[in-house]
Each structure stands twice: as C-alpha cells, then as structure tokens.
Amino acid sequence: MSFFEINYSKINAWLYCPYLYQFSYIEKKYPPRNPPSSLGTSIHRALKRYAMENPDLEGLLSAYEESWENSGYETPQLMMEYYRKGARMLENFWISERERESRILAAEKDFEFILGDLAVRGTIDRIDKKKDGKIELIEYKTGESEKYAQEIYESLQLDIYALALKKAMNLEVYSVSFWLMAFNEKIEIPYDYSRFEATEKFLIKTGSEIKNLIFDRKGDCEFCQISSLCRYSEKKKI
Ligand code: SF4
Image 1 (spheres, helix red, strand yellow):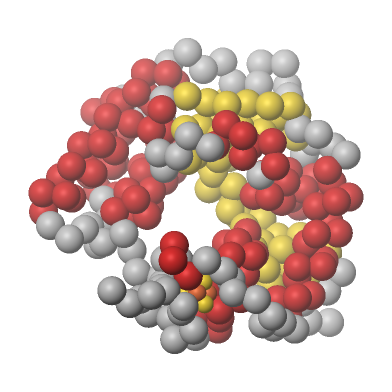
Image 2: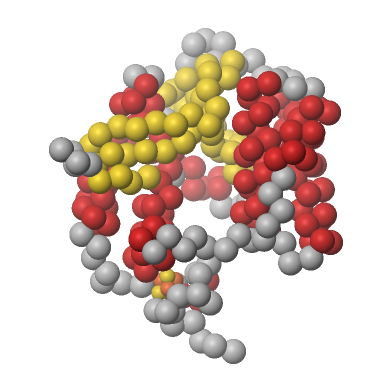
C-alpha cells in the first residue's frame, strides 16, 4: 500500500491557499526567503547544536555564526541588524537555560506515523523530560508576533506533534510549549488529550482534500508570501 505524505508545513500552505501548496509542493518553487525566515533557520540550526553539544555561551554563539543563513537580506546592513537580533535572543536563551531542571531527550527529532492512507511526517524542535518524569514538547518561535500566547491553545502544529509523540514514539506528552525567542519567554500549557480524536479527523479530512487537489478557494493575496510570483494572484498591482 502506498501512503500519501503530509506534514505540518504542507497542511499550513494548503490551508492558506491551495495555489500556495501547488506552487511550493507540486511545482517545487519554494517561496523566496526573507529576513525573518532566514533568521529562524539560523537560530534553529544553532539550537540543534546547543542540544547536542551543551556548549557554553561562547560555543553557542560560534554555532550561531557557523549556522548563519545569509540569503533573503536586501542589504548587508539589514543582515547585520538581524544577526545582532538573533545573537541577543541566543544570549538570553542561554542564561534562561542555566535554571533548567529538565533533561533534553531529543532535538530536531524526525517522526512518521500512519493514519489511514496518510504518512504524517515532521520534525519536533525539542522534547524534554522533567524532574518528575513528565514529558514536555517544545517548539521554538523566532517571530515577533504577540499572538503566540493565544495561538498555543489551538496550535495545529503542537496537536500534530503531541499525536506523533504518542503514535511514533509511545511517549505521553504532559505539556506543550512555545519558546518565544524574541521575548525570552516560554509559554507552557498542559496538553489536553481530548484533542487527539479531533486532530486525527482533521488530518484525515485535510489530507484527502490535498490528495484530491480541490482548488475551490483562494487565500488572502494581499498578504501572501508569493503574491508577486503567483499567476493566480488577485493582489492589485501598484
Ligand atoms: S497569491 Fe493569492 S492565489 Fe496565489 S497563492 Fe497566494 S493567496 Fe493563493
């Protein structure tokens, strides 16, 4: 039996607009990088090294420098501005981590589980085991949106990853967290297990729509990341 592969990024693109999914995952013309996405990549790479090597602050900043993604910046000045912003985030992160009482079980952990005819794949930023043995699932966020505090309660990404911990790794997640790097703050909430069934149903329904390529709507072209490249865009040309 062959399985149709989905992951959070594909679902996210599809939910925004089927044509964004088509552009990225069928035509394989990935959206161009911009400063926030490049900074996010650089920081995630450095944090992976942090989890593996447990470096001191100097080591973490060296890992950041070596991990730097320099595409997506229009000028060297803008790149330096973002570089310094990321270094500040990592310094604050490193200081906060000195107080950590949990143990890092895994970082950038790939998973796959089967759901009907779907193969659900992804990568979890970090899994911690607390002092009392409970499992915490952590996603790093490098954006500056203040909406994360509300979004964590309805995060599809965390729902999928909590399901993956159970189905692919047989781990019972106790809590889910967004680590907001730009605010030097970790928001942690207990995971609500009653969401499992709804998440499975949602994945099966959305996976079927993606598989059957039902193009019956468009996203908001005004704010779409590929509006200047998309032949279906309705964004007004200036
Ligand atoms: S520009 Fe509009 S039609 Fe094209 S992918 Fe974006 S939202 Fe969809």
